Amino acid sequence: MEDELDRKICALLAEDARQSLAQIGAQVGLSTSAVNERIRRLTERGTIRRIMADIAPEAAGLPVTAFIWVALATGVDEGAFRAAMTDTPQVTACHHVTGGWSYLVQIRAGSLNGVEDFLSRLKAGQWIARSETMLALSTVVEPPFQFRGITGGA
Image (spheres, rainbow, N blue to C red):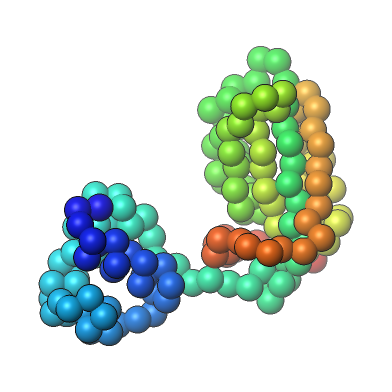
């Protein structure tokens, strides 16, 4: 970010992206057109990656959060695994990690059956040598949920 005004604009958008440019401008002391120009530049530079709605996962029928530690099988095409995680709607986060595991994958599912189905697909794709799954009992802090067209149920 270029300066403190950019930081303030980003913080305001992160807090509530529905604010009008005029509302943001009033809070940072800029005109609507100046705010618009700063947001355009921040987007072009990749500082602002997207502006999205924060959907309640439970309201979308996805109350179950699972964290899956994954050790990739020998010979797996890691790029293909990454692409598969990117293309899988249930995956809400996927981190390449240090230590005894290759990845930590976070998913949202409609039920425990949905978690089992996801694990079955990983195994059927011969991606994993081993895995360990943990379920969230409750959530204290979570980034905005990105609804990717998945539905509840299984």
